[in-house]
Amino acid sequence: MALEGCASFPFPRTALALSATLALAGLCLAPALMAQGGANRPAAAPEEPAEEGIPVTDQLVLARCGSCHTNDGKGNLSRISWERTTPEGWEQAIKRMVRLNGLSITPAEARSVVKYLSNSHGLAPEEAKPVMYLPEHRLVDETNIPNDTVHDTCSNCHAYGRALSWRRSKADWRLLANMHIYLYPQAENIFRRGSGAFGERPRNAAAGAAGQNANPAQPAPEPLDQALDLVAKSTPLHTPEWAAWHARMRAPKLAGRWLASAYLPGHGVYYGEFIIEPGSAEDEFKTRIKLKSVKDGSTLTRTGNGIVYTGYSWRGRSTAATKPGTAPDDLGREMREALWFNPNQNEAEGRWFWGEYQEFGFDVKLVRASAEPSVVTTDITSLKTGSSGVKVRILGDGFPAKVAPSDLDFGAGVTVARVLSSNPGEIVAEVNVAADAVSGRRDVAFRRSILANGIAVYDRIDYIKVTPEAGMSHLGSDTHPKGYQQFDAIAYNRGADGKSHTADDVELGPIEVTWSLEEFQAVYGDDDKGFVGTLSPTALFTPASDGPNPERKFSRNNYGDVWVVATAKNEKEKDGRPMSGKAYLVVTIPQYIHWDQPEVEQ
Image (cartoon, rainbow, N blue to C red; front, side, top):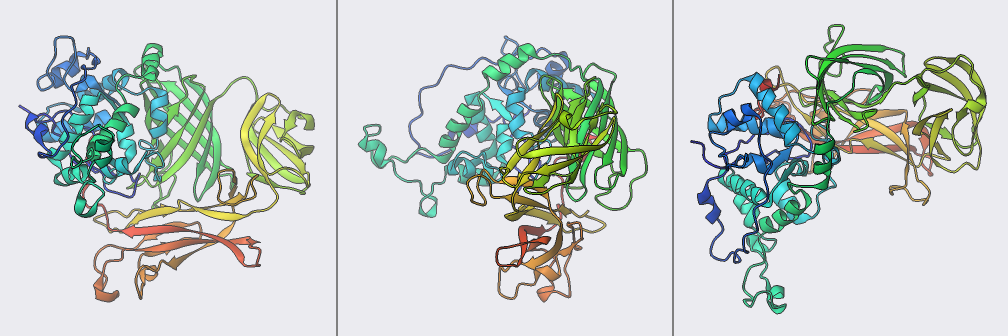
């Protein structure tokens, strides 16, 4: 029989935080572990009343999980009934049960279990949206970690989004922590250590003075207890959002024609259509995609399929009509899709991604096509004050053959001088921008169709930001595939407060630059720049091969860290120097082992 609390060490390939990944979703734990902690632990608080679980009604889940997860007679299975999470969370849990606890389940059964648990023990749309960067496999700098204690106990080893992707009872969060202590030797040290010298926790003298504890030598609450208290309060099992969504949830009605706009770093903006057709089940669909590049007019045609979990969360795959090329960023490669559909089922957003480390991807927005004209995107992203006769292409769907300047609106300070041409998919207009126009975002409107924040107005470019600001690439070879990193250079205006690098700065879009690498001086005689890899004119970093390099001092591997520098072609600083920006890049070793069994996901 399986021990309570067993879980795996999956190390998913997603690079969401610059750290390794520990499993955060356990299903049970050995009772003996509850005694961890030593004699100086504060006295246990009185037990709180048990929370109501979520009954399991699916016969397959009962059959495959019920032998270890006991039924309490009310339809609740131990652990499972006190947890909610995303499709990826349940998928990881099943993999862990297979690896560690001997679960026997077929791929078809596993897919059915994931679907049921995601629908009945899932997240509401409002709960899932803040952590969509996890299934979208984005490299992000997490700003949602509430304090240093939570960072140390939860985010030292995995993205905090992993915790936020689960909703648990308070007791289940405690069992999860015990599972970590059981499986990962370093976890107990992290959970119990303090911020003082040699890992000692500060004594709780303040509590004693306040009458909360008569013993001034009593230790302060352990970091784990503090973190669990916060996490349990912010991610409880029962929430108004889930109660409302579970009652409202219905089969998704997504079939039809959708208008797509997509941005791919290094390639630019694409627009087109995303056709969704019914599949073999009410929550499964087939897709046809046709996109066109705003930059060079090239087209991208793909077909695929998708499934919607919990009434809003799309997961899909698509393949190109032609055989993909050899370039790692070739658009013909198979792509995976993670989309969040608005509960109104009229719009969606997410990412289509590919690559050994999911490092390439389109940022995608969808809006349902209608009988009315729709503005999807524009060919330029910003307008400079005082400029005149600027040609703008408004790209969309259903435009009439005749368009008057009064049909278009670019907001305050921008005047449509004339319409040059119009067809169902494109309007070409000339606009003038007042010299005193206020810098900021503007809506682009054609009659009743509005592209919110579709274009920016600015008086000057104040700085360049290279994204991602902290990137990661992996050395590789024929045995271990390389991990690439695509960069982008984005121009910014200082915004209304007149200060650069503040919250009101205005993003102006990509800017023309030349790319180069600079040494990041970490040690004397640093020479990483000459060995880590190369940067293309379009800012695609290709890492060098792995393994010892006899041409390098001490025959070291080709790992290292460098600056990625973008130098503007046409913009200058106040002192006359070319404007530039830079990002930090770490080039590290390959990921030698994929702990999350990616082949199981096929």
